[in-house]
Figure (tube, rainbow, N blue to C red):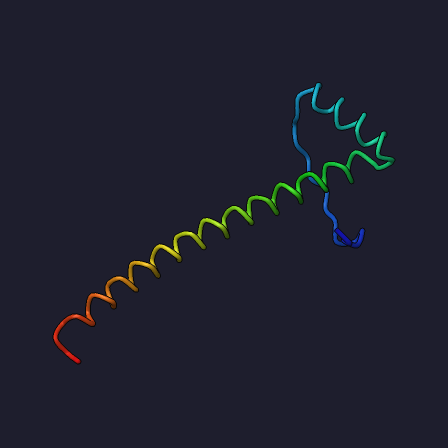
Length: 81
């Protein structure tokens, strides 16, 4: 979003006719071009995937941190005071 026209490239893909018709109708209803509608949809999808990836990495890090904390907690009972 906020992309300058000179920063854009052409990107071609094949989609089912029914999806093309739906995109056309929705874009017209929203008052935007099919390209803008498709671009926004792909940006939103890409953003969602990134958020899901960050959430998964966060869960992995939390599990690793909890495991490390348990290991360190156990080492405090090794007779050293």
